[in-house]
Image (cartoon, rainbow, N blue to C red):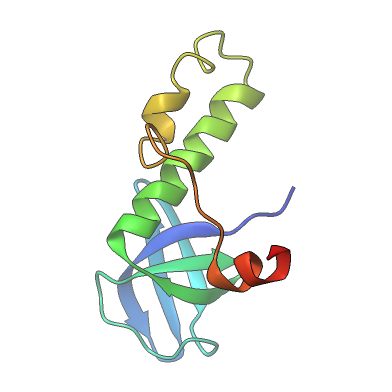
Length: 105
């Protein structure tokens, strides 16, 4: 499965940047989103930064990846911990983006 990874810029090297999430480091091509400051969160996919992310968006994406890893590892407690992984969804009904609300009337 190929999914984007939220990473934080830690060093700049011309049109590339070293980005990290904890101990994991990856050198990303930054040309799609332009040069970013150290500390910026980006979505890395296939060796390139695809979009700039807010710290909140990065935290939510990281939690979703942790949930997926827990479920795939067979963690018996993963189901009970879903509220922790998806705290932004607990207690509310998710809403569709405006362009999809228009499509369904």
